[in-house]
Length: 274
Length: 167
Image (cartoon, rainbow over all chains, first blue to last red):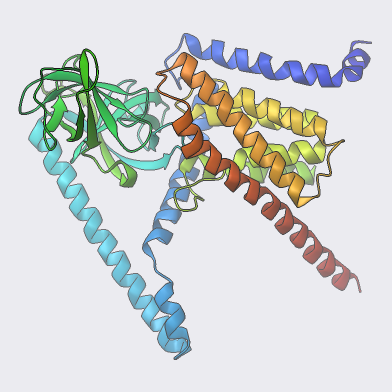
């Protein structure tokens, strides 16, 4: 009887399914830290190796040039293969050298700051164009927690917003909902660096009397304890003093957020590490 | 059963590509999951469209910085709409596929932007709409008919091979 009733009103029932599922999804995530639900964690654990593999494959294709091979194919098939093999070897060697240099910089950076950090590889990024996030291959099993700071040797990357057992989602400093307490290194004026959703940021709530200039460095203030003090966020690329109470300052992020491969997650202060 | 398993395998591949950021074209990424949900809705009806939309939307929400349930809601409704409208539309026509994909992308983007504006740090709608959603709609409008064409070509090739094996 009930089944027949449901079958007759199939369209209404299926249309009701969507908001019900959405409400269930939202309400189940309200009382927990984001990403900590058993279903979300299971999905993340299942997909993490596939995401890492896909990213590795696309990175490899990014580095290999096939254009030279096409020209050589006209001359000689064997010679072409040989050249391609050698090119691939050179490419791989270069990739290893670059990777070693990056890792060396990462290690130097960690030892310089004294903070307890976990190195993580980037295995994915947001493709919707609405958010600025990256997925890293370290999660709660490695000591990563919600809201921890994420850094690169060049500067601030962002903060952790969702933690899964073996991966975590990082909100980049350029996302519209990202805000970091900052100071202008030269003048010591304080403000908040907020993302613009594109590739840039804005230093907000900066007093109109602050004499900030293009080229000034913006660093973390250390307030709130989430980010270590004095880490480079970016460089001032434009100043607009047209506002009423505050001036608006354009900031170009220091870390190469479009080409992130390895990052550090700050898991503890120097004192906590000892 | 085989068709469902093939759909599940394809969904897994598309989800992995989508959430790892692979499969982009000059910085633009087609919404592969949305296109899959629309295709399922148009071919198998509203129930399949809703179920795939809700399921895949949930997984996308897991890896998204947006409001929880935003993808689940939009993809579920778009799967339902594609299934409901499939009776009235010529779903094998590439023009129809392109228009459906483009409109669905614009609708999804508009809803997600509105949610972002209301519940998160609102800092303008026009720039992300023109800079991210409109190009994505154009790209999705091109990718769905192309994928449907490739699918048909594969089915024809498979049919010919099976016929040749039979004779």
